[in-house]
Amino acid sequence: MEYNEAKDKFISTWGSLGTLWGINKAMAQIQALLFISTKSLTMEEIMEALKISRGNTSMNLRQLIDWGIVTKELVAGERKEYFATEKDVQELARHIAKERSRREIKPVIKVLKEVSSIQPDGTAKTKELIKQTKALHELAESADTILNKMVNKEQNWLSKSLLKLLK
Image (cartoon, rainbow, N blue to C red; front, side, top):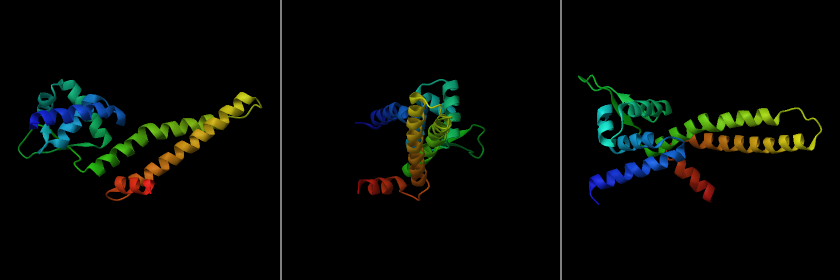
């Protein structure tokens, strides 16, 4: 397999996997392109490489910046904006885990706490609702606590944490 074929295959596959982290395909493809690039890229270079529109590129770059995965870089003497991504796989996983917790897990925990705290009215259906949502709330809080502990560990947190779980 030649470089261009391998590059295209990686970017395409990473784009498809992006939905697993809760982002869209174009957003993941932009991150993948930046991840394997040897230098920061301009918006125009990203658009050309991925064959996507300026609006799509701009919107997804903003979201990647919000996630803390992509940064703008200043290049001396250049007026264009350049973009780069985190190159350390462990750090990248930490950023994604933190952001997913903030965007997805914490809001669910809040709703489950609210729902499980309703006043019992003595009916079986209310008791069941409280019981089940309380159990889900406790599970979600435990999962979030574990995730936060793993995310806040030093370098190689993911592999060390996974090894501990497997033992």
